[in-house]
Image 1 (cartoon, rainbow, N blue to C red):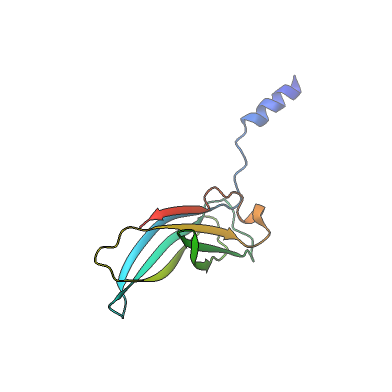
Image 2 (cartoon, rainbow, N blue to C red):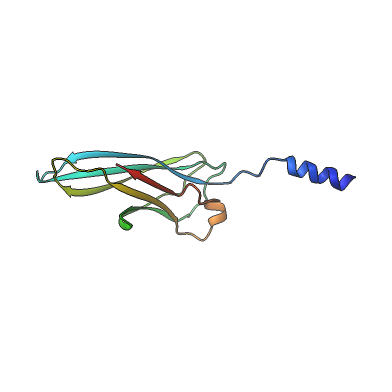
Length: 133
């Protein structure tokens, strides 16, 4: 009977929370006319937030890639983040001026370069974001 009660108690316990878990969210686009009037600067920004309960280990190496049509068009290192800490990653792309530019789709991909995956980012569920801007 006791083993059964222990098994029920363990099954009823909430799952252990992730120590650190990164979320890529909140994409934004800002368009600025470049010095060369025939071009525009497209500044694409996204937030990377550690939604876990612990800070990432010191020395964690990681970056965020920006892809368009499956091709990487930018990459930016991300510092190790504390619990509930955010980092705004911004990418600038210069494109020719068009009277009416159709919306375009980009993908943000978080990449952990360190070998400490279990402690730096315990799940990859929130590591990619596709946005039409």
